[in-house]
Length: 454
Ligand code: SF4
Image (cartoon, rainbow, N blue to C red; front, side, top):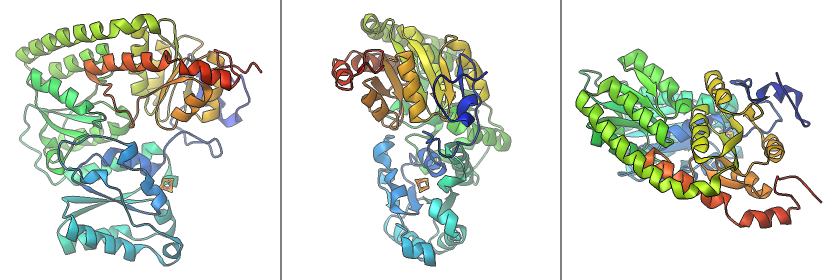
C-alpha cells in the first residue's frame, strides 16, 4: 500500500512505501527529476575501466564530461582510459551529419594510439540525427585492423539499466571470438570496478586461498585479460545491477554458472568467500579460506570497535545505484549500531526490495528511483544523521546539514573486503561526528532532526 506524507506526484506514490517493497523496474516519470543516470552513463561506467581500450564518445562535448575524474577506477597497467575523447558534435553536424568527424577521429586514433579496441558511444544527438555509426566502425576495422565496437546508447532511450545491458552486449562482442575451452579451475569477478583499489583487495583474498581470478569485469582490466574469461568455472557477481545480464549471457553461451556475492561488510565478505570456494574450490582451499576469514574478521572487528560508541543509536539513509548493495549496507549499519530509516536504489529489483523490506523496521521508508525532493522530505521526516550515496546525493546532504559518505564511483577509500568494512566504520564516524553539521543546521535554521524551526 502506498503512503505519501507530503505532496509528491501521484504517479510516484507506488514507488514509495514503508517497510514494504515498492513498485520498481519502471521507466522514470517525466518531470519527476529522477536521480537515475542516462543510458550512455550506464554503459560508460561499465566499460570505461577497460584500461587499454580507447573510449570515444560520438556526441556533443557535454556527454564527455562523464570522465575518469568522477569515475575513478584504478589500473595497474595502461592509463589510456583516463583520457576523455569526443567528436564534439555541434549545430552544423546536427544538420549535415557527424560521420565525417567520426571517420576522421577513428583514423587519428588508429594512427596515433593503436589501441586493441575502440568503443564508440553514440549518444543522444546521434540517436536523433541517425549517423550510421556501425558502417563507420566496419570501415575503420577494415582499414586499420583494429576492433571497433559500437555502443548505441542515446541517453533518452531508457535509463541506466539499459546502458548496463548495452555494455554487457559490447563485452560479449569483445570476448566472443576468444577460446571457450577447456575450462580451468578459476573464477571471474563481475561488477567490481576497482574503485580505490577494491578489486585488488578481493583478488588478494582469492590469491591467498589459491583460487585464480582469470578476468575482472571491468575493474583493472586489460583487453587480453577479458579474453580469458570464457575459460573460468564460475562468475562471481558483485554489482548485480550492472552485471546480471552479462553473467546470464556467459552462462548461456559458455556454460559458466554465476553467483551474487557482496564484498561489503565483514559478514557478507566471509559469506562470499565461503560460497565461492564451496562451488569451485577444494577442501584445502576451504581450510585456507576459513583461516583467512578468521584472521581478517578478527582484525576488522578490532579496528571497528573504537568507533561503535560514537555511532550507537544514529539513523542512516541509503540511496545507491543497485538494491544488492543497499542490502549489504543495511546489514553493515546494523552491525555498527545504526538504524536504517530510509533506503532506496536507482535500479532495484523486486527480489532485492523483498530482502530490503525484511531487514528494515516497519516504518522505514523504502523507495525506488527517487528524486531529490523526495529524499529531502523523507530524510527530514526520519531525522537521518547520515546519507550514503553517490555524486548526485552529496550536495543534497550537505545542504541539509546531514553527514554524507560516498559509496559510489567517487570514493577514494576502499570500502570492500574486511579492510573496507573497517574503513567504512571510520568514514561514517568521521562524517557523522563532525562538528560542522551543527553549524550548517544553525545557519540553515534547522533543528537537529532536520526540521525548520524559524
Ligand atoms: S542524456 Fe544524452 S546528452 Fe545527456 S549525457 Fe546522456 S547521452 Fe549525453
